[in-house]
Structures are given as C-alpha cells and as structure tokens.
Length: 109
Image (cartoon, rainbow, N blue to C red; front, side, top):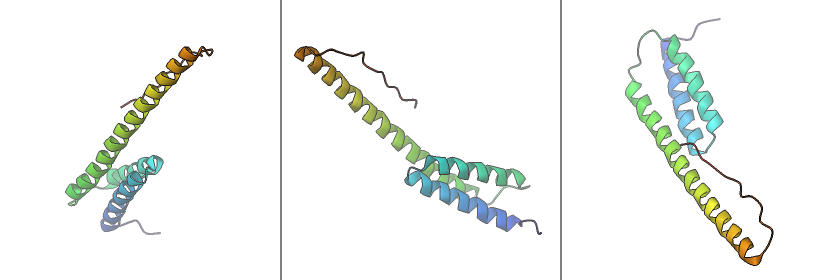
C-alpha cells in the first residue's frame, strides 16, 4: 500500500472544498460539515502549507456567504410564521374560541 503523495492530498483537499460549496448550494449541511472535517484531517497531515490556500479561502467564502443567506431566509420565515401565529391567535380570541397557550419559536444566528 502506498501513501498518498502531496499532490494527491492537494487534489483531495481541493475536491473536498468544492464538494462543500456544492453541498452548501443544495442545502446539504451535513455533507458540508463532513467535507470540512475530512479536509481538516488532510490539512493536519500536510507538513507545509498549500500554495492554493487563497483559492481554498475563496471557496470557503462562498460557503460562508451561503450559510449567511440561509440563516437570513430562515430568520425571515420564522418571523413570518410568528406574525401569522399572532394573527391567528387574535382571530381566535375575537371569535371566542378557546385559546391555547401560544408556542414560542427562536432561531440562533
């Protein structure tokens, strides 16, 4: 069994980073996490820094941007859901229906 060469590691690191970007675009966050775990393990085994670090950082920024966009969308949707819940609660009160205790929602950003 042969050990992977430095070029093999570089190719794998780049492949994992691109896979993380693609997974983020598809909303497959578990795959994004796994790609970064695997990439981190490879980076730890390398003895010298990669020349393509700038390229990796650009790809990482794409993932970070996607995460921020999804967080903003989710926060907006949760806000809309809470506003709808409050309106429904008010309608039920005006109609004299039994009102249940409203549930709360939160989002961590």
